[in-house]
Length: 111
Length: 153
Image 1 (spheres, rainbow over the protein chains, first blue to last red):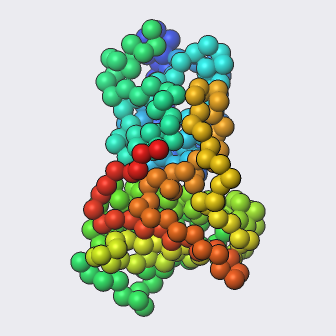
Image 2: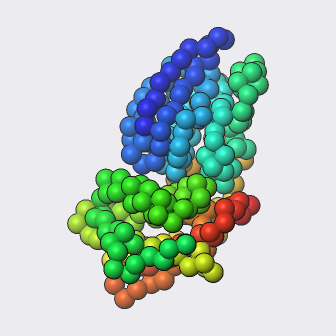
Image 3: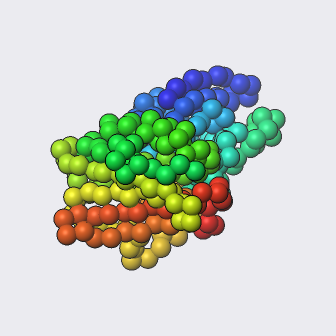
């Protein structure tokens, strides 16, 4: 599980998640995700390269998202693959965090 | 479609009750996927359900104790599909016995990041059957051979 970041315009931090966000993957990124959530107000979680998402992976998304929200920020989920998106929908995360498959609309969600 | 050989070690995976052993599941599933041409979406569902089932057994069933066995048996039938049977020797636990269904959170702040594993298994497995054994638990996960959407909430 790899995590990289990119600063986009408007103060948006793109967090690129690459690999399996299973128990092992969650353990590998949790600390860094929480550090990023503590310093960035607008997070675009790029899920295009996520090949797996389990319940511990959902936690790795939810806990930082809650931290960002408490600070008045926003989190957007970008481009999950179909089965990853099914996991988000099955856990009702799609009703709490917006999912966008177009980068333009994803960035517009922060305005 | 080839039938599994009852003597083939590939139809049974034995794990120790350590989260690290979850890493053994993926290559085993890769082998089954290649041998039985399991569709990608179905493989994802199996992967997810086994991840949730095994992690629950390790963390909750065995309480993190690392020296217990967990076995996963695979079988395939053109009528009933793919079946994964997970057996442990942990104290009795029923994943689909809940006092009340947990309502969906209305806001992000309402979310308690936990307890989603069973919910995901129920939605991504075609069938889920739990049985108490004299000395443990048996969880049978069934998956249709044809890819299908999970049930709505």
